[in-house]
Length: 349
Image 1 (cartoon, one colour):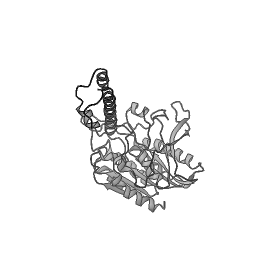
Image 2 (cartoon, rainbow, N blue to C red; image 1 turned 135 degrees about the horizontal axis):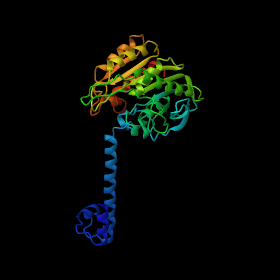
Image 3 (cartoon, rainbow, N blue to C red; image 1 turned 180 degrees about the vertical axis):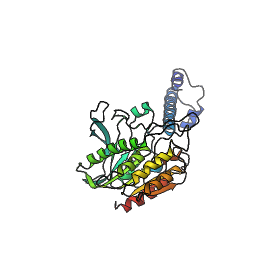
Image 4 (cartoon, rainbow, N blue to C red; image 1 turned 90 degrees about the vertical axis):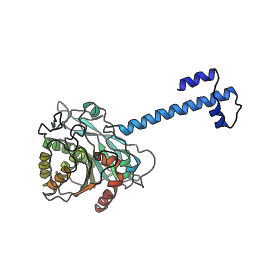
């Protein structure tokens, strides 16, 4: 489109009505028509590119899902939020037993600190290429939400993902047949252990930083990261005063088995085991239209967990309109922010 308009400037513009309307003049010199036409062509080309980029972002199914404005807290600071990149040593996590430098994003509020600090655990993708290309461990809008509360954020990229690299330690072994039936017994205890280990390492690193209030730490995670968060609080880590589980679970396949993950009964057993030692206040948030877990299993997992004596609160929000409810953190700010606000106040933050 832009190319054809450029050629027209070397000849003549046959239909100058649009240019006349824009300029208010009927008799427009030829060179002026060329300049205006080129400008219109550039604007139209830019609009096509921009609209294509937005459409691609809105339809992306990757773990780098962008955060819309509805997630942002009203008091969020304006402007871009850029992380400080740090490396956290993970001993023995390499393929041949070597150490791995785990990449993490750090965000700090204004001021000298020390700050209450949140450790965020991202979700998982089963696709090897998506894991290798993983870049954004936490939505920027969610970062702004916490910074507006004066809370710093540490968001590691776990072993096997993105710039951290290394082997895929989180494979639980879930499989489905062509009809969406689970055909294996996933090793959820293994998944709990490996994600707990790496989260504890990130916590230990944070407690050594001078800008961190080592006795006011919060854990938060989404999807498998939510499960990792629940597993970590079961270890009773020092300095952690609360945690938030967004849509936590494992072994879901919404495309082939919507509404029911693999071996939900076994995951209920594992949640019950974790609940026996987790004594830290928690908040569990799930949307009713979560296509990974369905509307029933999350409540059963929570009941099994609190049967061990935990004080975790369960919030089953309304359906997330226009999206899979599994993306509650990303698109459901109006559904979850009131509950998280209240929970944070209960923690004294």
